[in-house]
Image (cartoon, rainbow, N blue to C red; front, top):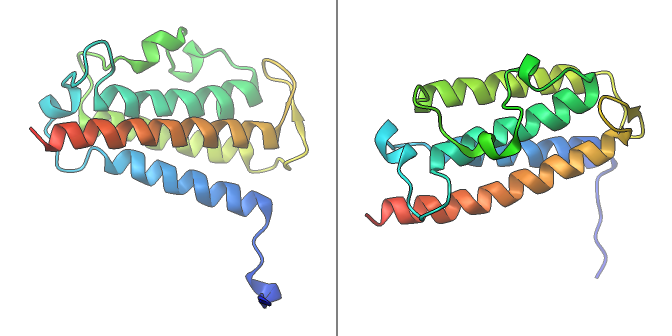
Amino acid sequence: MSHHHDADARVSARDDLEARIEQSRSLILGSLDGLSDGEAREILIPGRPSILGVVRHTAYVEGVWFGEAITGRPRAELGLPVATANSWKARKTDTIESVRAHCLEIREHARSNLADLDLDDVVTGRHPRTVLSLYTHVLDELAWNTGQLDILRSLADSR
């Protein structure tokens, strides 16, 4: 079977990666919809993070890979936990709105940091990597976190 594609409908690899990351971002923030702060921070599986903790971790992922890896600025300077283990923990002062705002702030920094870079550019922030490598790593992490959030949200909704 032959498939005809309109040449104008072609999407660049970069546009495709960005669209997929945006879809994950939307699903991640959407996992908080309709929850109270208490429900979002509830530990539903012993030893695992809360929904709020997983959402918070996604901001960390983007901050590390689209912030620290590009700029070389230390995590603490970027408003991120130094240790990855701490990125999964909701802080006592965290609310759904504060975590949402943090995610949106990190997202804007990411867009700004990536704006003038091509996929084959090499960034040397912490370790040399191509921008394509950063995109695929973040997409992989966000997809994994989206799956975790699907499970946690199903558990929260079944209560």
